[in-house]
Image 1: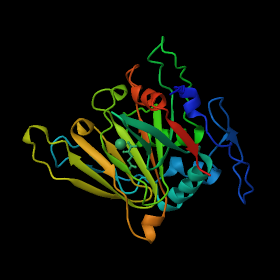
Image 2: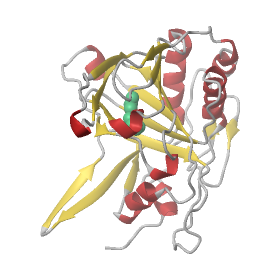
Image 3: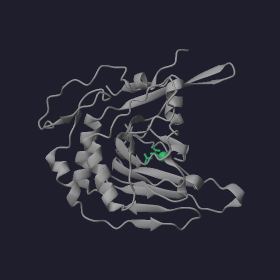
Image 4: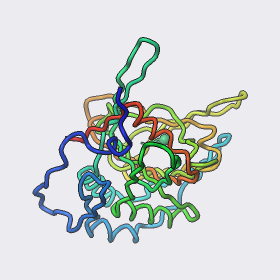
Length: 284
Ligand SMILES: O=C(O)CCC(=O)C(=O)O
Ligand SMILES: [Fe+2]
């Protein structure tokens, strides 16, 4: 099976977005050769609100072994959060990652149950690697959020951004921890939720008989969770599917995580995706 380069992995399979006729079109766009299309800058109604967000004191959740969370309820008030949700849903390039797992004679085609998009300047870990990395800089519309979040969570500095779009309650992310090597030990990850309320479940990896209660946070529009310290090394987290024919199960949710890549040489996950014929399909 032919391998795809990371560059082609990033290219949308379908056509670039067509220009839309809107009541209130963005006034400016940011361009970069690695973007599949120019990405709109924030409209003034959102950009002007971000520096003036009311200061919310986060709840510190450290009542379980190795758990270190800050929970902002909300970080962004609902009027701005809703506008931001619709803006990002409309303006970002989102993809479904498809890949193939081979176990012996069995081949299984997996479609990731959510849309994703990735931005950030990651140093090329493999100077001799065939794959030419073509990182997408964090676009100004997300960089404004990064700055606002860094200002609130003083000390953290992020250079990498992963956005998930859950189109409905059928979309999900399985239990995992964000302990990739490129994030270094004890990474600090800021995770902002927009749109439909969804449960964020956490469970301890429970090595060596550690007793820990599972954690459930019902993340609402504008909420933010910062995961710090030993959390990733010891806990798994997930967003399960949400069943039902009404309400949140039918609504979309966007989650934006800001991370810091500290180890040149740790982007294997992204290489692996591309080498296992990762295929990205743009939202229609
Ligand atoms: O959607 C969320 O709240 C979590 C997303 C997540 O865990 C991830 O992208 O690693
Ligand atoms: Fe995660």
